[in-house]
Image (cartoon, rainbow, N blue to C red; front, top):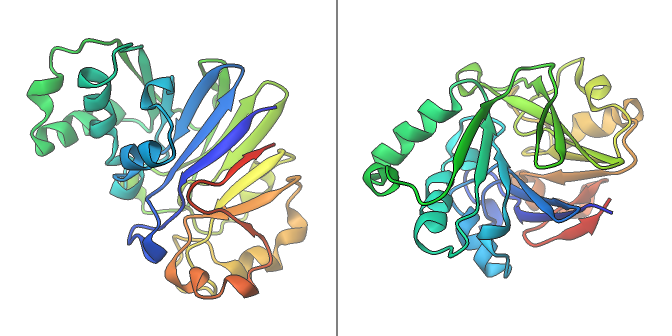
Length: 245
């Protein structure tokens, strides 16, 4: 069965000392990383996971706590990883240009200009399947700041499937787009409504009957949720949580 490792489960502020968004999905000897926040490389090392095992990375949107760790993973593959295996990075339209801007801003563009490994870029097209390393990804638009080009992702791994919300607020199409997956990984920054571009526990609980997912696990937990975990009526992830689905 596929397995998932939650490398980072915190919000943009690192609430509760948690790392930024990063989720590792393994199946049939292949590894896909969903999101790559700034603390991802450190998180992988803390968990004893070789960053070189990652075959592909899918970025849900361009907020820094979901994407800004990618230059460090590229540097690691260039200078620390003896295998220097090929890597595919998938993301919203403009993913390659955005990441080049980021590596230039970090001062790493020169170090990565003559890469010792193959790097491929692929753009999501909402509503259309794409495949990478044996995984099938189906991107959907998310309800989040539009300039970040936000997407939710349904991921197929063999006969199993999961749905990753990235960052999104509630929208009427959300439960149907999740569908009957084996695992829904949903962000939950807030306990009550307060910001339209993030999910909250109150709304998820009220709409729970609409979801057909076999299991729901909350991640991207903000301070209001972490302060009230005893009131949360869903499974919650923590940094380093590993599970099969």
